[in-house]
Length: 88
Image 1 (cartoon, rainbow, N blue to C red):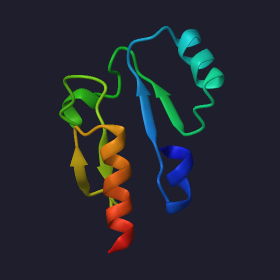
Image 2: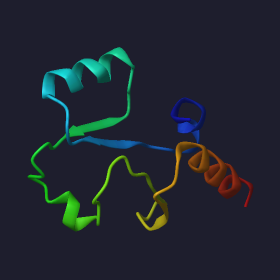
Image 3: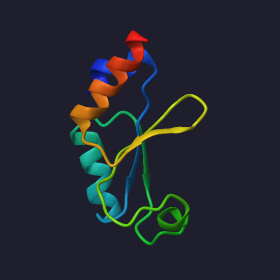
């Protein structure tokens, strides 16, 4: 989905909260995850409380003003939502 939609302005911010740092870095490279990737296994950033995240994985879709357009949807729904928004 990212490769097909990045030209529309789509950006992905992915946070790893579980894997060993080296395993995570290896996976980012192996699977060519060339979007924003961060690692916070002990919740130093406080993301769980700040963004009401109590289960993973979770997807949020934000607009250019960082307004939440959708949350807790699957990757296919992201693509459909963005395509619908492009048509408007």
